[in-house]
Image (tube, rainbow, N blue to C red):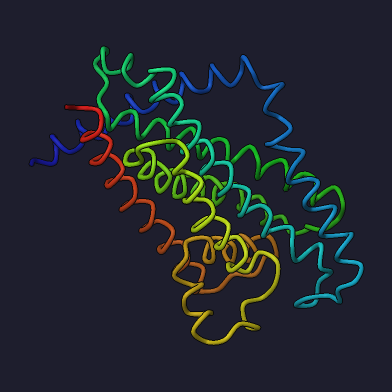
Length: 263
């Protein structure tokens, strides 16, 4: 495959993905009043209830209040949640119940375009959630570093990564109920083990090593470093790990979705 062919493929895939993203965006804009609660209100309640409520009984962590320690974890974890939820339940309903994918395939678009568009849309929802949390955290004085704005493109990358992983599930499950296993056995345990609520150094060594293999752990650490305005060489490694997860998951999701849709 020549370089020109690769570039032409990339331009075509991004264009097709954008058209699918655009379709999802237009649908969201028609119904945003019913979805804004989950995007903005829920992480706000999480930050206030646990950060200030439970935080009143917890001494500061790493030189900051518990609420300030929690805020970047909420940014990263809710980017994960919103991207994962929309690219599993939402995507499955679009595929099997509303037959949106079937309609798309009557156009020049292909399964890879559907996957790219869904992943881009999942990342967009992650970005919206992260923006809402960041605004709230800044308003309460929990985040003061100007570098915290860099958490937003990282949240978009987190969304891309988890949306791509979620699309693997969407491409393979036989019923929507199986999605529950994805959240119960993968997303929720990772939510508790990835340094969102407390530092990992309290875990046994084996659990710490396992936690760093999970994609949310480097994501949380990267967001926390940016929010604090503290930079280290480890941040490059964390960024590379998240990007590797995204690249592999996107490729696998595209392959599996083609097998499912093209009989």
